[in-house]
Structures are given as C-alpha cells and as structure tokens.
Image 1 (cartoon, rainbow, N blue to C red):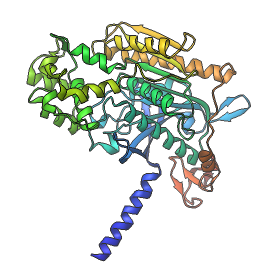
Image 2: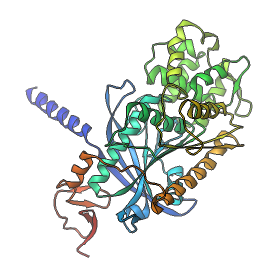
Image 3: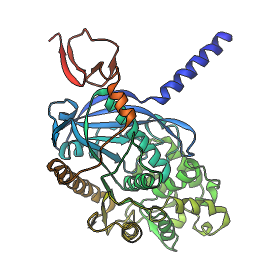
Amino acid sequence: MKKFFFLSLLLAGAVSAFAQEPVITDTTKMTNAMFGANYYRVNYLYQSVAPDGVTPVTLSSAMVFPAKVFERTESTVIGDKEYGASGLLLHNRITMTRNSDAPTLAEDMSIEGIVAAMGPKSIIISPDGYGFGASADKPQAYLLADATARNSIDAVKAARKLLGQMGYTYGNLFCQMGYSQGGFSTMAVQRYFDTKGADPDAIPHIDYTLCGAGPYDMAAMLDSVSLPGTTYTNPCALALIAQGQIEGAGIDIKASDLMRSPLDTKSFEWLNSKALTTDELNDSIFAVVGGDARNGVPVSDVLCTENFKSSALAPFVEALEENSLVSGWKPNDKTLFYLYHSGADEVVGYYNTEHMVDFLQNEGGVGDDRLKVVKGYNTHVSTAPVFVLGAISELLTLEKKYKNGEYVPEEFSSSSIAEIQASPRHTGWYTLQGQYLQAKPTAAGIYIHDGRKVAIGQ
C-alpha cells in the first residue's frame, strides 16, 4: 500500500508538471482537395481553465502551416528582417457537435486548409475548444464568451511557446477570424482582450478581427425566439444554448423549466455523446416534436417560452445578457474589423450584425476607416465559404501592406518567449515534426538544429 501511495504521488506530480507545459502530440501532412495544396497540422495539448474560470483543464488545439512555412523552403522578407511566416492567425471554429469534426481530429480541415492554400503566409492556430478533443468528456461551452476567449488565448500562448521551441519565426501580424459560433468566439476574444488587457506571451495586439454571421446579441435572440408562432429550422442550436448554460456554465436552473420533455433529457444525451452532426441532431429533434429542415419547428415546442419571464429562468436570462457582445466594453483604437452576414440568414438573424455595427460605431468609436461591413444574400450555411473567401482577400491585402511598409503592426515582445528562444533546448535537435531530441541524432534524415534544416547521413 505504501508503495502504491508513493507511486500515486509521483504520477500526480508528473501530471501536474505536464499540465503546465504544452506538448506536441502528432504531426500530419494533409492536402486540400479543392486546390491540391499541401499543408501540415501539428496537434498539441495545453493548459487552460474550465468555464468556471478556476478549475485547471488540459485542452487540445491544432497549428496549421502552409507547406512552405512548415518545410522552411521559403522565407518572408519584411523590411530588413527575414521570417518563416508573416504572422499568426487565430481561427475560431464554427458550430460542431461531433467530436470527430474537431480541428485536431478532422480528416479534412476545410477552412484551415483553404486559408493555408490561398491565404497569407500565416501560421494558423485552431483550438478544439472546451468539450472536444482532449476534453471530449465534458459538456461543450457553447456561446460562453469569456470561457471561450480564455481557452483560445491560452491556445495562442501555448502555440507561441511551442513555435519558439521548434525554431519557427514569424512577423508581427496577429489576426483572428471565425464564422457563426466562430464569429461569436472571435468577437469574444476581442472583448476579452480589450477589457482584460493584452497578454505579451499570448496576444499582445490584434491587427484584424474578421467575423461572419455571429450571434453577438444573445439577449435579442432570446426576445426573437420568444415571439408567439416563431419557427426555427436549426433547433439543435436551442439545445446547445440550453446545455451550454446549464451544464457548461453551471447555471442553477432546471432543464425541465427550459426545455420541453423529453428533450430536456434526450437532447443533452445526444449532445454529450459527441457522435452526431448538427443535421443529425436536428433530425433527432424533429423526430420527437415534428417539423423538418425546410419548415422548421415552433420554438415553443422545444423551449418552455412561457417561463422566460419567470423567476425560475432569471439566471438563464441574465447569463444570455452577460454573453451578449454588443454592449459593456470599449474596443481599442487600433484593431481593424470586418463583418460579413447574409440578410437572408435563417439561423442567425441579420440584426446581430446590425446591433454589433451600431455598438462599434456609436459606443466603440470605430470609424469607417477601421470597419468594413459586407451584406450577403444567401442562407447561413451557403454564406460560410463566401465569408472565408472575403476574409482571405482582406488578410492578403493587409499582409501586402505590411510587407510594403504601408502598415506597421506592434511588435511581438515577450521576455518568456525570448528566454525560450535563447534556451539550450531551442538550440538542440528536433525532428521535422517538432519533437525534441536529447542528443544529436544518428539515424539518417532531415532534422532541425538551431532553427535550420540539417541533413544527417545523407
């Protein structure tokens, strides 16, 4: 028993030590099917906190490299300096409910792969988020603004540390983008950054925030779905919001006060299985309460809308107001904003972007020189690729201005990052996948030493 107890202490110490340091778990060479362009995905684990803001949790994220950046075959010259990439790009993912679609697990990284193929020469950081990948056993933190922002910022911090250890250099551009839930998460990162302050080891500045069709005004969405006779074609989003608040944020309300039976139990079971796509979840809900993807279902058949004004659901209503992003903070005076939304969006109402634009302009003081708004005319899903292409165009334009000296971002400066890059570990040997080696390798192959490719025995 004493031996087992001592071993438990050692294991606990090892887990604690591991939890503090980001670790690369695997590297995969991938190909974008549309363009036939290669890119690399480097998965890693990192430390963050649960939605309560206190409990430590290990999460997973991916770094996506354009092939020439990962293979170090082409550098980027900016001014009198040479970099491996022009900067970093945080990509906040769209709504997903199936674990196998997480950025670290997906067989086809459709958005990141397109950005890597067509976009700027950036290193893309794409977190799985709380509830997927390494934390798939936990309920998704759906549309929880601060919780999602913390997890994304911690993912960037870990990625920068790993990039320093791997010897990758990058210019000073830092941008972020996301569509739908990703648009909400992207603006949540912006709010967190502007209210909590910059983190020099993670995100010291934000040059461009590009959001598509985000549900920025959660309180207004609640008012909208509460109207008598309202139908909705994407009822799984209603279940996600309910679960995110009750199980993700731990709001003290009864599921049966918010959702109709048997959805108050069945929908959470479906969501927590992480086995169904959003379409499959919608079909499961339609099978219980009726309706279909074309005509939708009355919201009052899914949610107990008659209880929205009751004291029982007051914590839920307050939580939605807290997670609304259209008031209560002050944008900085440097970040550029790009907002894309379809006026015909049947899932996330266009009023969300209207309210965000009104806030940025009238309360935030963001002028037309820093805010670009584009209105589309298609459905929520079909507009997503249009947003991605528009965002790529904007990012390429900014990168070109950066290279030409027409745009000068703040510099990445961090004592801890500098210490990493000056440490003996950084000057050691690595595989092309970023795995640190204890000594000079003896097997033939290509390795990284002092940030450069070195051939051994070839």
